[in-house]
Length: 217
Figure 1 (tube, rainbow, N blue to C red):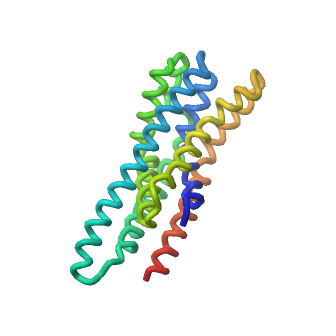
Figure 2 (cartoon, rainbow, N blue to C red):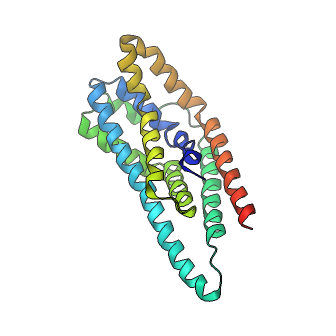
Figure 3 (tube, rainbow, N blue to C red):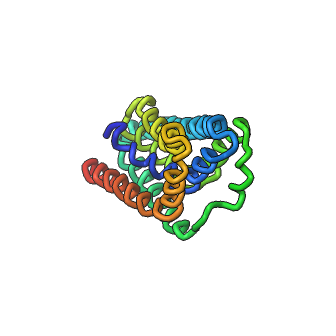
């Protein structure tokens, strides 16, 4: 496994309300400033989330290894794989349950005049309180730590997550006034079809985890 394996899960992080919010901010009174604040808040939380999961997995794994050394057993990989698999199954269930939540949240209308500081808080809070994002960050950090990969392998995942969130802003910068149609299509896709892509990505990563379990068994 390498950092390329976890990159598809960045889609799960942003597909849905997160992308819809990014579209609204790109259409707000201060699109550039608000979008940059939102991206900063999201990047900080995602970076912190996967890092905490990575550190905790390494600490718990290290303690388990020390304990297993006494018993003559040193392979902690399958146990972490089972935890990651449980996180992915939970994530798939949450995505399925939330799939019929159509339409943007009612509070989106209040962010049309958001300043950079408000947008930053929104970006941070949105990724903290969303169950799918919490589960994804936990799975990504734990999986990277399970394979004894250094912390920097998490960086491309965080950067791709932020880049995907930046697509509405990039559309605005590149297309100018004609970006309205592209932004509308992004929002409609996120509201109607994102859950399908999420389930496919989760299933793919779950398959890789199962293969790790089989190989270690």
